[in-house]
Image (cartoon, rainbow, N blue to C red; front, side, top):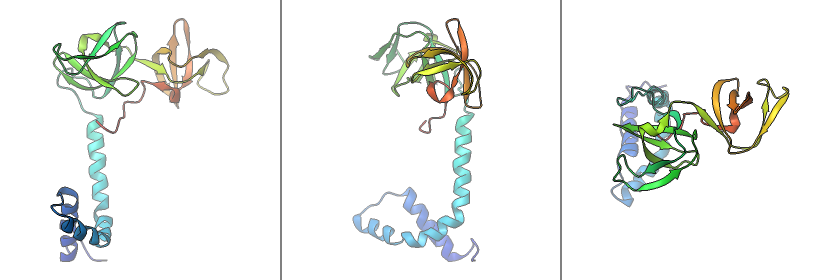
Length: 205
């Protein structure tokens, strides 16, 4: 196998960079690039390992991002402090209200921050700006479908209650696909898969 210093491979790498980082300026140029695609496969195979490392590094950097405004990680979950909170189009009171949230404790994914304001994503995927004081660090989760509240983190465990979709629970520890939750006076375990408010990974931030 030829080494990466082979002039032909260097030329192919330059073509690959052009394919990914330039815009096509004409249909003819696009056609020429398309015709060269089979020749690029070998180049991609040789440099693919490096590309994987770059992607993983970017993902890792996103995971440990710390906000300079709050000193807290982004993204992260918080919850609504009050039963009436306005979600606005931008981070000040001059921006129009897009949504009025009327569920105290509703989990929100904080995805961006500025001074005194937080951009949050709600369980339906909509993003709005809220004043930071309207949010609490208390962790909650939204039950997304009807599920049994178990005494232990196991499918075979006895049930304590049946939770309906839309119930908001205070979130405890999660382990092996199960999360401990508290609803009123009831405490137990539910499958992590039925909860919104436990996974911060978004892939689009």
